[in-house]
Length: 90
Image (cartoon, rainbow, N blue to C red; front, side):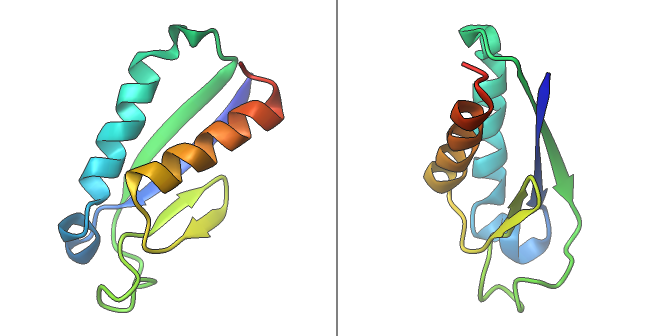
């Protein structure tokens, strides 16, 4: 089984810019994993690591080691689905 690790910053600036919406979107995808995927999606809210430069690049999300700045739900869901397709998890 392949794993997709998603670290979502839960610091103040990232939260104000929508990181909790991103987590909710990913969790809704996990809830419908009856799609038959062989990928495990692991979502980790992480504390601020300072990469957003005081909100300038918020929210910060790291998907399997790839850092995405100014992230939104659509971008992150697309990144996850690209990994799912590439891994043959569908």
